[in-house]
Length: 388
Image (cartoon, rainbow, N blue to C red; front, side, top):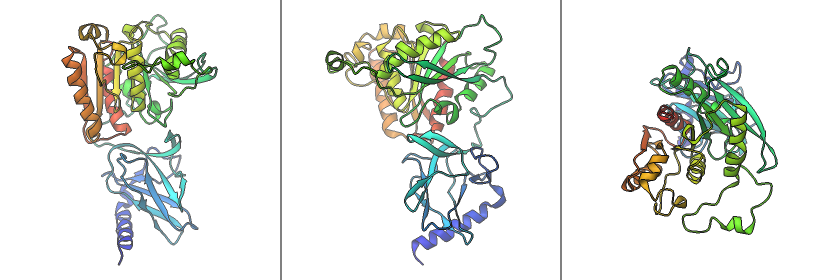
């Protein structure tokens, strides 16, 4: 018996053992029974494809807690292909099917914008944490805000979280966190995959975080007018960062729109910026270039201040005492399985503290990698430290 047949028979046995213990994933479309998740985190997937010669489950990316490699499904006599995975890590995982080489989303799953397209995703419940689940507490709202960008000459869409009770007191004003997604994702990511609204609801209800507005924008921008030769060259000097189109969108378009339309506390003391992966690089560049605008910084699974800190980032880190006075928090977090990033974070913290920069906090999400469970935990640790 060859290895492929042996694995297929083993997969069929595991699927049978999952049986009635598995329940439909909370990320399924209405009335879909599969994918189904068992109590130990095994996930069973099914796809009807009677004419297919081969079907594989493809986890999204090399750091996916659902599994690292494509997995073959077993075809039944009814044309339904089935597989049950090994126990997966808790949290949200992207995936899709490869059907005879064609990428296909799972019709039983909701789709989420990731990998630069709508992609299937599955939520694996955690037996030990529910900080990102809806609870019986007052809930804020996710609002959609359209604004015209002078930078791009186009309409843009931001998702805005307003805290519980925002509409009850017209005199109350709130600090603002600008929170960015990662590469291949968009402004829906933090509220859908990340569940940022439930995380904030639960923290605010427990009085662990101050009520705040959270703004989640699309992290890509193309300027209406390409930068001139002088402007384009301004970032070529050592340690000097040229403003990106997205930075101009945030500073010149987005913040004024939010401050005009929402009851914000519109000063640097009450404005923070954070992001995950690609978004952490954006947060680092934008915040350090605009210290008259931001005084709180969160970096999740990505950028960490590095290089010659005496000259890097336009010299904003050269005077540690002055930087510590102006920037109340530099938070850097990552998953314990992200060895390259955690090593960079440790080195960055040492370098910052050597320059007498004191408002540095590091965080490690145990057992997770470059996925949403890491970033949910980062936000849960970061938000309580803001605006205190």
